Length: 257
Ligand SMILES: C[S@@+](CC[C@H](N)C(=O)[O-])C[C@H]1O[C@@H](n2cnc3c(N)ncnc32)[C@H](O)[C@@H]1O
Image (cartoon, rainbow, N blue to C red; front, side, top):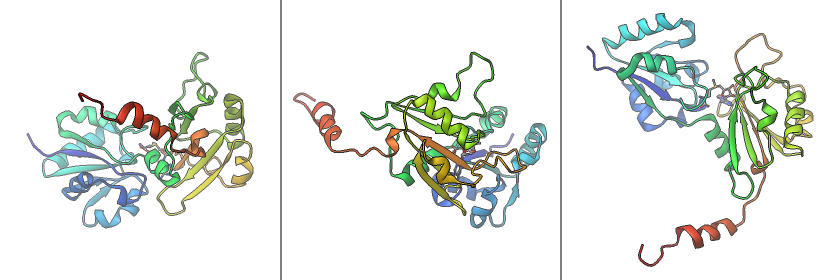
């Protein structure tokens, strides 16, 4: 029985600068690395001299056998886009590997997007909730909630793997919010070809123009590397009043504390 581990390393949005120190250490000690595109390119320097395989080129059992065989001689790593928290296909492998699997958290795409926009997504007094959703995984039974059901004033929506044409998406969101709210399209964040388009539900279609940010005209079925963020917190400006409110009511040490 080997003590070697299979590391599922949160690799961030694509730029190796976002790898954690823990992730970098695990990667350094793995001879075999499973890297989805474009990580084999953007991580090339950290992967030099290692065997690189694309996980999606294998069926599940085949992949497990390959991992188990490699574990006999050393650690194995998977570069997990963003990290495991949302929309990650690796859960089956992690469950099958049990004790041999170790998950290392990383910078999710939404964390990197929030940082790039310099906006927190649940600003007090502006957005009370943040909903993470993908039209690809919403249910198709009549009673299942639809995207429009999540689009509410005071809610930041983070839409992964969108497959709805932008004019339809903007219309549906407009109906849900019932007013014009900010929207940002973040394409290939931290990768070559990065584009960020900021607008509102009323003008985003014109601002994007002919660009196919969601691969809807491409032959591939793979989702584009594009994240959509919607909601009032994207453009809200915060003054010091919440700070002072918290200082007064929450943070300030009181007698006896
Ligand atoms: C299978 S999900 C993986 C999400 C990942 N686990 C995370 O934490 O960000 C793939 C989707 O994540 C988003 N995404 C991943 N990388 C991205 C990037 N570099 N720029 C913009 N969106 C990205 C896109 O919505 C893409 O369709």
